[in-house]
Length: 272
Image (cartoon, rainbow, N blue to C red; front, side, top):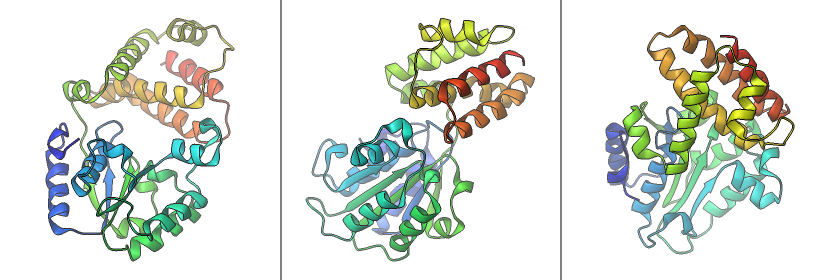
């Protein structure tokens, strides 16, 4: 994984190379639309800083902190994770204050940084204000405006642009391409159909069979792609659908039954 392999983000790559050349410990804020390579660029930067291993994801000094990681270290169901907690960030702050295990740099990538609780954000702020030597912190988020202003003021922002459909297909693995294709078909078939019929057709399972929060969030995010494209082209369906899908993603972060969120979202979209 290298910076040269990043697809469709020449300005973000250029700014990242400048940051590397300065050997700076100032945190980077990688922000922009979903699925455009923000975390991938963070990992590519980590590989530039610590080139000892071919697979940077297995480097002992590189850590990606997200809800899945938090669930793993807490031995909890990932579907129950709503926010990144202060305990998770405190553990990472402690790690960054220690000596590196193998490489010259200690790297922390906080994925979906907008999920930090206020307490966790303030704990992170302490190390952003005075980062240890040879420490790199990358905050990844599609929602820059949800971060505390104090966090934003300590980071160097790198904005990612929306990718074209061709670039997205080059970026995504085969499984994601298939999921996008299914979302496109669902989008085209929504108007006038019942949500129960659509769920049965697209999931291949009867109503009532449990589907995880993570699976539903992924389906809504993929369904948002054709909706956002319709919005950009002036299609009234897109203008109405994007807020509905955004509201569904917000509801999934709260204590709402995921299957109910999905079914209600489809019902609303089918009426548009």
